[in-house]
Image (cartoon, rainbow, N blue to C red; front, side, top):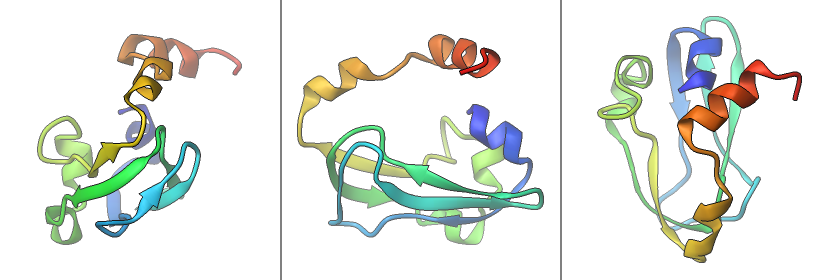
Length: 100
């Protein structure tokens, strides 16, 4: 997770409430580190079905295991076709290297 790397060690995670609806580009939470704070934005529309409550006590899981124990929240998609608009990990890495 590139954002997590640029922030440094995560010390606080704010997540959306279960049952809340989000749309693409909606602010839906925040990550705070010893370096900075950054808002979380939803990449797709949907309803939050689950949050990773373990992050309340152990926000460092985002750094240690962002693809496993450090996941943030789950959504029930409103429109599954929105997934097609997302970048794959390799595309995102290249995007971050560019002057976007």
